[in-house]
Image (cartoon, rainbow, N blue to C red; front, side, top):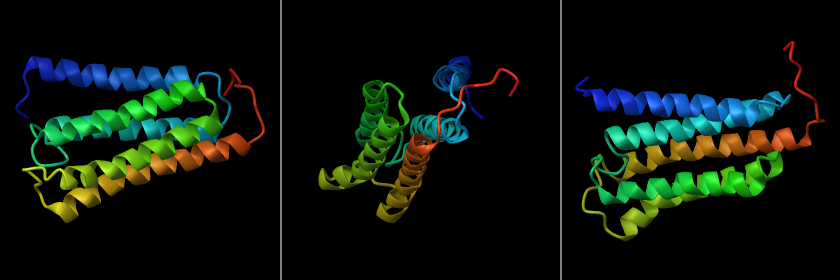
Length: 156
């Protein structure tokens, strides 16, 4: 690894932020599906930031097309705020996030991004992995919305 001290600080802040977000969002939830959905969504977001910052999903990390992934994350965060972290609203927010993720390489192709390495099929496949992660989280949130409400037990 060729990291400077700033890279380690950024990595620590990202990991700590994801851990803190998980604890804040799931702190009072007794639903295993809700906790799993939250973890999956946060892990997908973390990996999206990590991979995009390290090597870029479309071409190199310096390709301006990669900035669109910030919009993907913004859709998820704004959707979560609008949903007030309620499971059914979170499911909708994560489905919208998955759709936005799917559209990024399509938009980059339409705009004729100059750097589309490692190739169209590889970029689409990698993006589809993130689509599956966000959609899987959405399905888990939808399932959590149908579970009976249980209070968080301090013994669990």
